[in-house]
Length: 57
Image (tube, rainbow, N blue to C red):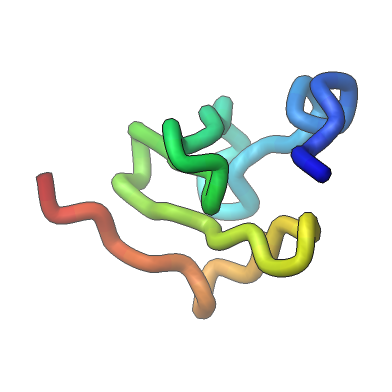
């Protein structure tokens, strides 16, 4: 089960309060401003700054 679009629309980055986008694989949420990826485990987004993975692209 993927994230509901309504839920995705209201989620914001906990660090900068910016917009998040779903990864193409559907395994995380990306904040382009902070360059962080928040993982999604068992269809639950883990929105903890300390648990986010840095994006190195």
